[in-house]
Image (cartoon, rainbow, N blue to C red):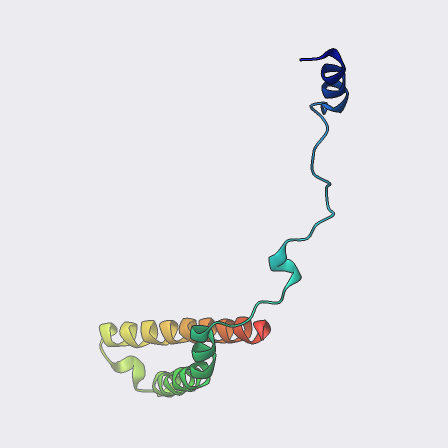
Length: 107
């Protein structure tokens, strides 16, 4: 290798602490562009109000049954099953609302 090129290569060589990339100059494409809903997400968003209504109706039925004074006169297994059903319905309703909010935010 000629001495002139060797000197140029040494001068252009980066020190270990230097980086070849410019920090913070480039934003990722995902951040720069707004995300569009996919076909499945659009269908899911369309179906969520019906699912939420169904879960709210089930929740109202269970609350009505639990608020009945005779509810706790049933067997402990039936009471536990109804309370577990109410908890799962409440959890499903919370998840449906969260998903609806997430999908609506992407539009």
